[in-house]
Length: 194
Image (cartoon, rainbow, N blue to C red; front, side, top):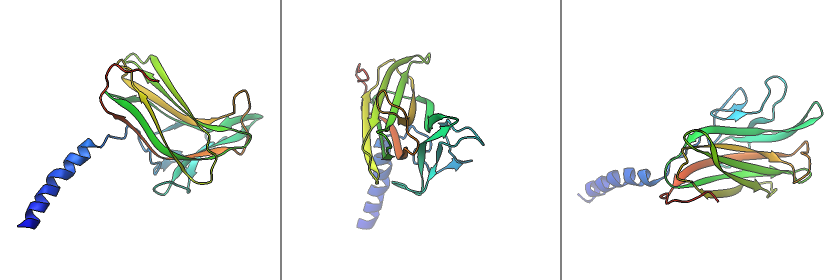
């Protein structure tokens, strides 16, 4: 009898706990799926048959793969790998991006995350930018949070490498991203992106 009660309680509680967990708004945020060398669900700046600055990496924080954005020379110009997702629908709450990265920096290049918050008419009303500067051999977890303006309806996210202020990118720099989770948590109360 005790076992039956325990099974009934577990059966009822598990769905409730799962409902409380915020949904990841990113497609393939764990970077386990790639097609033709590019992460499924993400837009890249690779130039097919000419330049590949975004690719899968076997070094991962969780799962089997992560995504690698690297700097390469392209006809005398240093190009940084870049991944993005656009028009991600948002609702009430605070924006929270969690993930992990490995940064190999040549010449003080840094990782860069930007989130453009947009209205229903697709006008940008706020931008959140964050630099990832810890150059380590192992994955560094990070969490970024921002309040969403009431007018927000969707957002765009972009991840890449940037040169130190006023500098130039350096070939050989790269950043790995893995276990990205974008969620809207809490209740929105007339708050602004900081």
